[in-house]
Length: 46
Image (cartoon, rainbow, N blue to C red; front, side, top):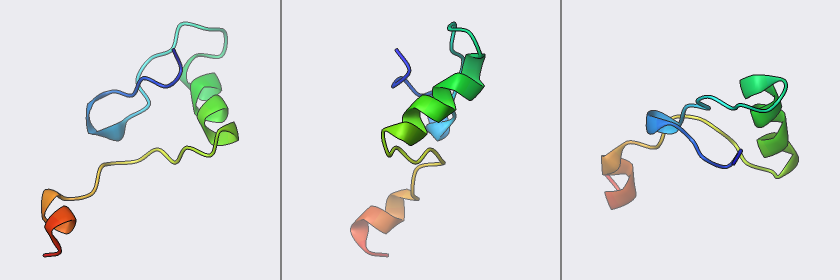
């Protein structure tokens, strides 16, 4: 499934034609922004 991300918010692998580039395009079409997760302290307002 193209919605599965690797640890740290990385794209990871994708077995469909085009590999991770296709996965990234599919996520972008769905409005998903991929990147590292926010720092743990950010969720507590620090």
